[in-house]
Image 1 (cartoon, rainbow, N blue to C red):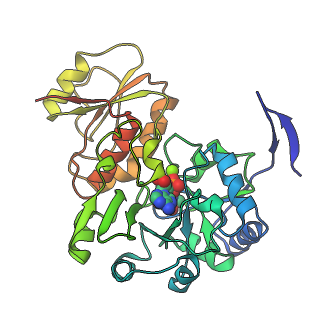
Image 2 (cartoon, rainbow, N blue to C red):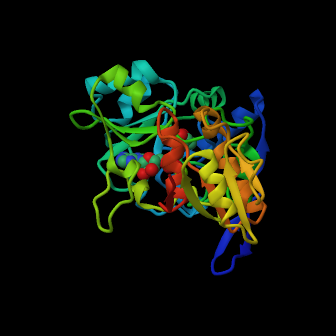
Length: 352
Ligand code: TXA
Ligand code: MG
């Protein structure tokens, strides 16, 4: 039974959030809740998503409330079958069909001209809609049992996306009907977002479907300037998510670019109460501050898997500043670099 609790400056409904597991009766319950307009957090191969029936504008509006998300930042619609795409979009350009065959199901989101059934709450007033077909079996099963689902990452707006059900519960308990626990997410960073409404594929957000992989399949691929550069005030954005501070722990993240030795020397010159280091596996031994690691320097896949959890642990350990070793921006490393740039608010120190 929902009950009313006084918030600090607003009254909001708090409810008992069900913690569901990967078993048939729980997935059916999750699907029933979604069909009834409730919010359910579900695992995907990238990060946990906060899902609602994509065609139910009221339910979708509640996603924005639960997350504290700005209303002008549109959501991705998740589908389980290729047929579902046709009802959600106005047209599937040939280049998008090629990408569907190559990368779906999987961590690739495409932006299409939207069909009229997409509520304005999903597209945030744009005439386009983002669609992806996740590969995670639990996400697919729940969509099959319910309907296409609008789902942003299941974090409170602005902080790192959750890659484990316990992190979703930290952010969302009392605000949503249920969380389905599917264990740790395999990829760890959100899907690659590409715009397919123009003449060539344009990457708006890098992810596990890399620029290199896209180029192999469609030839010409553009990467939006905002992937690696700070937007100037007032600049027009291709993807509203680009303009917000993102993935940021409470700690001030400072990205440090340089060799392992230069990084270590820099951090050791800046020791103080609350300073921590976020570095690569095997590179922390000579640091004179507490440190966490997020994969080896070469292993971009592990970096992606571990980054968001590491950012959350920094807060648990009350870091005030986190000097973070900078990943190289190739392959899925570009996604890791992109998330860290935003976590750091583009504060980058270039050594050597
Ligand atoms: O891996 C993922 O994509 C996860 C899982 C849950 O599927 N979802 C996710 O959603 O990361 P979210 O809402 O956190 O990020 C969606 C991004 C935002 O940057 C948003 O601005 C952009 O996609 N986006 C959504 N619809 C768009 C549209 N029509 N045009 C341009 N950008 C769009
Ligand atoms: Mg997000």
